[in-house]
Amino acid sequence: MSASRAHGGLCGQNEMLVELAIKDFAIIEGLKIHFSAGLNIFTGETGAGKSIIMDAISLILGDRASSEIIRLGRDEAQVEALFDLGPQKGSALESVLNEAGIPFSDDLVIKRVVQRTGRNRIYINGSLATLVTLTEVGRHLIDIYGQSEHQSLTRPEEHVEILDGFGGLGNLRVHMSACYREFSGARKELDSLLQTNRESAGRREFLEFQSKELSDAAIQTGEEERLKREKERLRNSEKIRLAASQAEEGIYSGSGSVVERLGSMVKALKDVSALDDRLSPTVEALQASLYQIEDGGAFLRDYAGSIEADPEGLELIEMRLDTINRLKKKHSATTIDELLAKAAAIEKDLFGIVDFDAALKGLEARLISAREKALEAAKNLSDARVAAAKIFERKMEAELASLGFKGSVFETSIATEAGADETIRLTERGGDRVSFLISTNPGEGIKPLARIASGGELSRIMLAMKSVAASGRVASLIFDEIDTGVGGAMAQVVGLKLKEVSAGHQVICITHLPQIAAFAQRHFSVEKKPTADGRTVSAVVELAGESDKIEQISRMLGGLKVTDTTRKHAVELVETAQRLASNIHGKNGANGRKKQA
Image 1 (cartoon, helix red, strand yellow):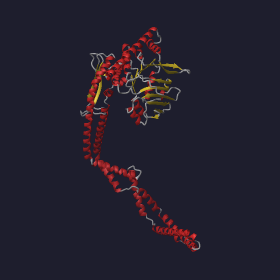
Image 2 (cartoon, helix red, strand yellow):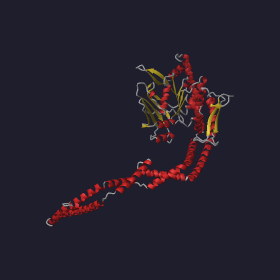
Image 3 (cartoon, rainbow, N blue to C red):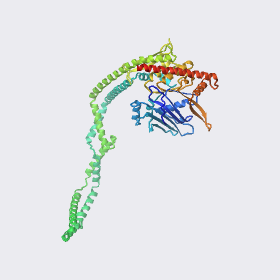
Image 4 (cartoon, rainbow, N blue to C red):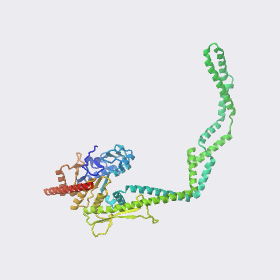
């Protein structure tokens, strides 16, 4: 898989999806798609396989896999994607890759293999990776917005993330999270200490008994091994004495002993060594050996005489070993070192109970300090949210107006959450509950997004929000049939907005509407085709020429029967889209020149 760097002059873009290869995935037998910057449009009949392509991309981003996705008759399915990361050096994505031990480069290749046996493998730049790592990497690559995204859009708990992302409050969030963790940790320690103290009355007595028992035992490292050796010696004392006596007699005191015979040999050799001095060194060596053997025999004589049966000593050793084994079993220890470690832990626990008052004062002071820091961090974050919300509201109302919501009102509610004790309830996200409210028509009351009934309205609100809030975040966006419920002139407005968003992001969009497809910078047709064996596969064809695009849009307008009228209408749609798109580029260029000035 090789990178094709057709960025198309995408302004401000970081990473983008360059190529997607799919093999034996659902009804896709083998497929390779090359993407570009700007607006990539997929069209085709329902069931042709458009959603399967989105499922494959989701798999690359960390969705869980099932063997059900494998094409019938195949043992595994494969999805591979190539991303051009561009100038991402020092980014959060590079940090994620480094933490996973994956080298960073301008090109990123992700491959997933799903086997019918249940084994799934993930490769990132050729290195095996975990699903957790893939999910974290995918979070920095692409955002997917489909019908299911409507649900998250209506969840207030997601609104704070959108607002913070828009306001660039990442550093404040990191600081808030650190302060909260410190505060939460101190609170847990205090709760644990108080609970321990409540249980300490009986526990202290129990720990003191255990501590005294272990202390009185005075067990030492290596003692068990030494006692076992001494026990074996005492049990075999008669055997040891007999062996030493017999050895001493044979070496030293018995008739014909080694000392006696060797002494005679040394004397004889010493007498003749005067006749040949070459014998002298050997005689001296034998004489030295004789002395050593005599010393050994003398030692064995004394040693054998010292060996006596000691039943009392053996009994004491066995009692000591029984004590050690009993304590080991009682404290679930397998060695004396583990037992000594248990004794140290008991002493530490006992000290903690005894020193409760001092520990309580220290923790209470730490908790107060940590809470003050967390409250200050929450206030700073809340103030920044209020400031960001004002700008966000103005931009959202402007975007909504451009998408047909004339006179709409968009508000951000930022309320402080209180706990049971009526104090601010802090979390890692601060102390605010953020929710978006909207009135889509003049004169209507403002209400939460969750109460917007129309899927088409939610689609346009989502597109407006992405247009406002996505800058500076993930550069590749996928809109999966979010044009549901949109038609007529508004479809053209949605298409134009997608084109605007694609000026700063790579946009991949699945649509059934010709008014949106007319804005495509790169247009793909998804079709079902029969194979030689009578099965059905999904194929993707890029509509490279203008005539192919016109023909596809004509079919979207006219259905099975394409007439000259529908072709003429298709031409008008494409020309209008091109004219509107050129106005966008002209406006962006003017804004750029204004900023430079």
